[in-house]
Every structure is written in structure tokens, then in C-alpha cells.
Image (cartoon, rainbow, N blue to C red; front, side):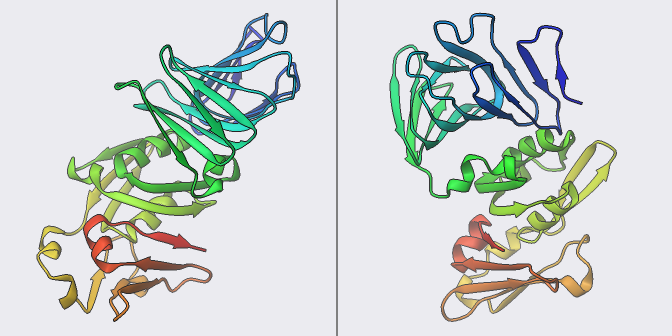
Amino acid sequence: MNKVSQDPFMVAVDYGQKANLTLPDGTKVWLNSATHLSYDAEYNKSDRKIYLDGEAYFEVAKNKDKRFIVCCNDLEIEALGTTFDVKGYCDDHSVTTLLAEGSVKVSNKTDVTLLKSGEKVEYHKSKQTFTKSVISDMREIDFWRNNMLIFNSSSLAEIATTLERMYGVKVVFDSEKLKNVLFSGTIRNSSLHNVFYIISLTYPLTYELEGDTVRIGSSINKDNLWKTPHNKIKRVELCSSIIPPRNQIRFIHDSKKEIFLMRIRERESFLLHDFTKIIKSLIFRLIF
């Protein structure tokens, strides 16, 4: 359940929940799971300063005379008439700002980074450094608002953290090695079960849901697979205990080094490029 404290200037969103609100100046805010947002009684007087722990998407009301500032993990993100997303959970290693429209200034005590539309910057807490880049897929800015999950070479450990917040569960790995498995893809409107099911289509995972705990394991020894030269592989079948026999997964290697992975299920197809890269890094793109 989402909670608004007796102090009207603080909002807390529980694990597995989302919320949205309109600030006194008309700025619209969407809050992701496990997020806290607060502001004091001085808000919208000389400036508009809020404090964020978690992830929020902002549509800032235009007011050139009053700066809009998000304070998050030793950073200040300043914007005027801007649409942007800030992800900065206190237990994450970084804070990411993604800009959809307008411009923002991201700064700590020593450095300042300016963003324009279609750019993002990641602040690395331990090194206190910034990495700016172009947003390759604009859906990345607010995918969580639209009930989507987008991962780009994300480790299962990183994915587990995201899912724990979104679904209010605890993810436990049977092996430390599993935490480093990489996954890239877009998953739409899925239950927790379906998220792990889709991930298991690219890596032989097993998973068990026991109350609020999800236990992740592996069903094969992939080390044997790495020893086979990729140009000798004609067909590889990866079957997990959670996949029904009629939906067995097949990687098919053709002369163009493209792999078409099809599930016997309406409207679901996968296009995988470069067999070598997939076998070594387990990265794929999910096409709907």
C-alpha cells in the first residue's frame, strides 16, 4: 500500500507499487516502486526543491523565475520546463538521469554536466564521475510507467534488484556465477512468472516461487557448450524443466549467422543476431 505521512510533504511508495501526484506548482510526478519523495514548506516560494530516493518521472511546470531542483544521492538535477527521469536508489551504485524534453543541469560538489533532449548521464557514486551518452531507445526513459521492462546487457543480479522492487519479492541465487549472466530484451505487461520464463528462453534457468521468495538455478552445465566451435554448431536445443516439451527452444545457425528462435505461441517471436556473441554473452533482442 502507498502511504502519505501526516506530514503532507512526504510520499512513500511501497515495494510492488507505483504512484503519481501533482506538486503545488503544477509539476506532475510519477513514482516507481520503493521510492520516497519529499519537499519542505518553502517549496515554490523562492525555488522548487524536492528530495528523491528511488525513481521518478517528472513533467515540470514552466516557471523561469523559480528553479526546479531534484536532490538525489549527493546530486542536484536542475530543470526548467523539462520532462525527465531520475533513478537514484540509495543502495544502487549509480544515479541515472534521462532527458526526454528541454534541458537539465546535473551537478555534484565539483562537476557539472549539461543534458539536452535524448541524452542521459550516469553518475558513479564511488568514483564521483559522470558518463554521458545518447539514449538509443527513447522508451528507456519511462518504460516502467508503461508496464515494460527494458534491459541492455544487464546482469541477472541487476535484474533481480529491479524485480525485487517492482514485485515486492526476494530473489535468491543458487550460484554466484548466475548473477553475472547477461540479458538484453524488452518484456511487456508480464507477471513475475512470465518475466523469468522469458529470461529462461535465452539461458537454461530454473526458478521456483515460494511465497515472497524466488530461487534461481541453472539446469545445464554451460561450460561444455563453450568448448564447441561455433562454426561446427548446426543446432543447439536448450530445455529447462519449466518449459513444456512442445515449446522446446531451438537455436538454428544458418549461413548468415542469424538465429531465429520461435515459440509455439501466438504473437511471440525472437530475432537473435551473431551466434558467437549469443553463445558467449547470452545477449538477445526481443521483437514483438
